[in-house]
Amino acid sequence: GAVVSQHPSRVICKSGTSVKIECRSLDFQATTMFWYRQFPKQSLMLMATSNEGSKATYEQGVEKDKFLINHASLTLSTLTVTSAHPEDSSFYICSATLGGDQPQHFGDGTRLSIL
Amino acid sequence: GDSVTQMEGPVTLSEEAFLTINCTYTATGYPSLFWYVQYPGEGLQLLLKATKADDKGSNKGFEATYRKETTSFHLEKGSVQVSDSAVYFCALVWRDDKIIFGKGTRLHILP
Image (cartoon, rainbow over all chains, first blue to last red; front, side, top):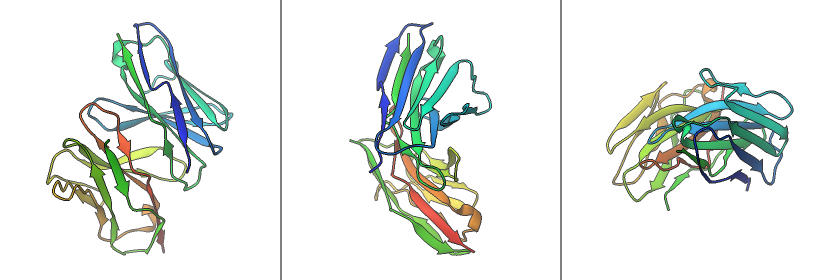
């Protein structure tokens, strides 16, 4: 079945560091990838929608200059958390889809901890 | 480990039919349970949730009851509409762990 790989699975770093998270669709070409943030004990929040070759569409309230998304190919999207601070600590989860009414396939998530 | 199992689709119904999408879970504790909906081309939207046993989540005519005895959280709607056509994901969160999704169920509603 469809597989999405997300890397790294866990990051611990100092405040002010920039962190890059990769999301790869391993056996299919994803026209669209999504980035979500999960706050502790809470539901998922959609951050942005990423289409290959175009600028990401950010949800209201998400700072695009802080959460940089690049979708350079049909199999890779990256999220860079720039100048991370402790309040950015969260799970970040990506998903990928062929598009249309095809289900999303989720990465395993990245636990980001900013000290 | 914790997991979520939901019925595979696609599920095809006529408009105004009764809908049930089954969801069962395995978890070491008592997780929070969620149903999300994915419309074509869009990200997930939270449809409803329940945080403890016997809680019923409801939204837009959809309901699901947290059943601890059967470890289930089945999604129901009494009368579906064409606009309900989407992919539905059941999910759980235990404490501060990462959310765990089922594989999703595609729903097609015929006019």
